[in-house]
Length: 113
Length: 115
Image 1: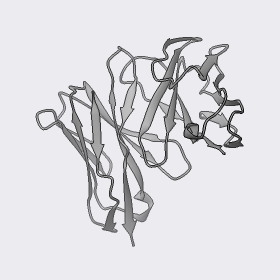
Image 2: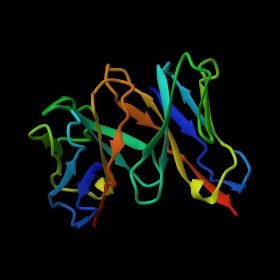
Image 3: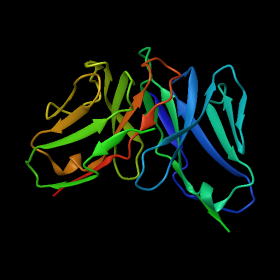
Image 4: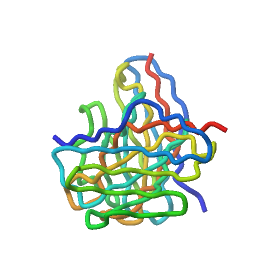
């Protein structure tokens, strides 16, 4: 069955540094991959979608890469700020022709001043 | 504009009781999804609505779980005879269309605790 793995350990970095989060998947060839941000006590918020034919996508300080050979996506936040502290989830669509997603457990990012 | 809302925000119930969780999607969104998030785990897909029909109920854990949607708007997830393993955050999301690529907008969730 399809499986998504994200680093369960929290990532602690200093303000201003680049945070890099990893999403690996197995038994699957998704047409796209999404990244979400989730704050404590809140629902996930969509950040970026990258398609299988795109190697890289950027949005402001965010950058996502998608390597379909390695079955891996990297999520980067440059010039990180304490406000970026949250849990970041990756999600892949299951088959079915509609937007049925499976989510990783997420990686918690803590940016320290 | 208003986002997805869910009620109640928190629910504590005793084992064996029934609970109803409500989701109000963004107005005009035809697709509605229910997910469950256990502590420290990813979101699990439960059920998907297109309009008022549910083409995919494959994620419902057991026949104690049911959901309906009326008026192509509000949806209710009902859990009968709750068990302690039902304790989780139940999240609802909606999207304008049910097709792939569409952004899903999530509500804040209902935190259910079964004692």
